[in-house]
Length: 95
Image (cartoon, rainbow, N blue to C red; front, top):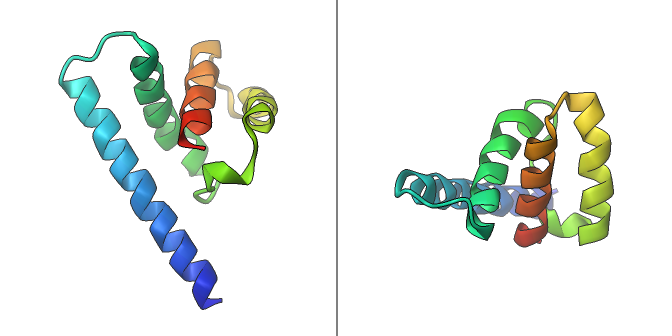
């Protein structure tokens, strides 16, 4: 139980730091490059996925599994195509 709590705490800290970096990069005027998709994905993930889900470790799924999972959740969560692509990018690059 303690290991699970520690893992969740470390993951939450990592995701918080990732979001902080992502929002900072956007505030600094990042363009719509590869990083831009990651930044938008971090924001879309924080605004949409965490409403219903606990924080998940990106390493829980392979890149191809994240694509399938997020595409499935596009319908269930009412995500736009761009949000879906951005979240996939964020999860895969965090993997």
